[in-house]
Image (cartoon, rainbow, N blue to C red; front, side, top):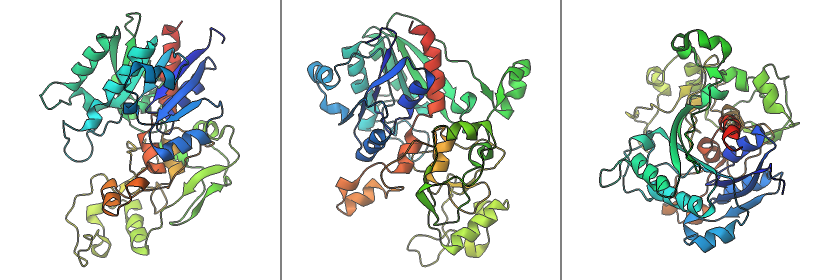
Length: 402
């Protein structure tokens, strides 16, 4: 194989956003292997596997010896990327359990790094990893650094916001970057600024582009009412922004643009929200009711749900389960998989497989349907590393892979 090729291995690949970004960054990057345990996410990877690289559907914990790791993917990588599941460190959601087994999956990632000895590795995680502690009270980030230093890597910690790299979304993440040659690798230079950063950046902001807004990102997608849309559809409008034009590159159809089926009452609730009313101030007859509560108004504070995506602002962070989180900028409904994919900077020709939404794993277990517990389209999109952020990282690392 040509020595100029840079082989990339993607662990905990999910829907493939991290690997896709490297492919977008340079023809030098060749994705040789993706490892992912979830059935529907693997279906997504296979549906978009244009270069026909090796896709392994398995739990990384089953590769518990050096021999098994080498045999799984024999093509030695120059760089290993991946984001071990981060629910145990996330700042969102319920109180965290320091004994959560998902917190230690980085050790499996480290074992693959130890065996394959790439020049560089990049591990993505949520910001909570910087403050998270294990059951003994030790800082997890210190344990991670020591783990990789013990196998010969110099470790760099980057805190990046996807909005600073052309993604129309405020998404702060931590990237743990290791170099085999002892290099200190600084984070990539930002290309976009948030309005709130303009004063802080002073004169340097004139060399940057203002962050992409929600309407600049999704304003050209077909108008849909609740319960409308198709998994494959035609464009209805001409792309009017550079982001929209770039998103449509190589696409002649729109995929996964299907809305939730809302009741008339919920649609009216969303109409009030579009008119500037907050969820706690909507009309009494439109307030959220307790589940199985005989019409009693819920006292739950919906801090993460019913958030109106303002047209002229960047999006809030797209979480793993966003189906009821966001109200469309100017249509009384939740956003679709495709709209969320745009806000994550996936191109329009990237197809997502599996069900659009999925009930909770707890409920599936109660129903005896554990075997149906897979990542929905919404889960896959929300879990992904935004391709444009990945692309910026990949372009930056070219200088250190020479």
